[in-house]
Length: 302
Image 1: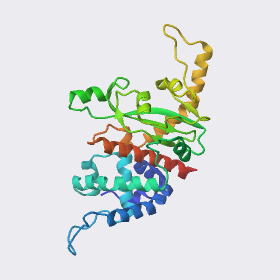
Image 2 (image 1 turned 120 degrees about the horizontal axis):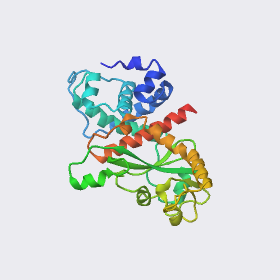
Image 3 (image 1 turned 90 degrees about the vertical axis):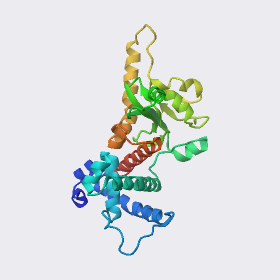
Image 4 (image 1 turned 30 degrees about the vertical axis):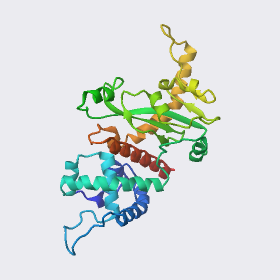
């Protein structure tokens, strides 16, 4: 059985298994413990067990339960592998994951590190991002198993990745934080189509600089009041001149912060590896939790 106490001895082991340092891990434990108690109080119907009934609990403390769900998000083991590591049946490993992932999501929400999901008004935008002066928008895909339905196969097939994928849009800042996360979409969807369907506010705030890649070409036209910085497209049948190539390289060096932010989220195996669970909601929940953990890591590192 996996020895949790050994993993807690060094930051190297903790980061390899959970993605967090020991100090960041221990800072989460009290809020996670409180969320566990609230979940138990609202269990419907209340769990009934005879005195002495049932087997002994494998994970007795909030610390051990938090370690398990963090290890699942970081390493993304199959339930069979998790069952072997903890000496339980795979059905119990599955139940632990389904029970404690929402608890971890609630804990990160209480710590105010989860990205925003829906922003309908400009006022809500400034309330959520009070110091935002520069925002970076980018999309990212993660591989998924090929759907059995032929129509879904076409929808999820990404010509860019030559694979079946799911896609999210990320809005980040110059501190590498993930501030907003779109709902998931099949891999064939275009980035700017996802952006328009999200939706951000009907009128994006003035005074904010938006950095995007070439996949958001319609942003300037649809939001003329905004300052949008994008790479210069090559004219059809022609080449960019030296100045345009130099400007594109400079833009890429500045915009790399959002790539680093998405790379930080993909440190977690549940986001980087091929998605093999069923249901889009669980995949979306994994991505949301991974973004929150990345933001929590940055906050604790300051």
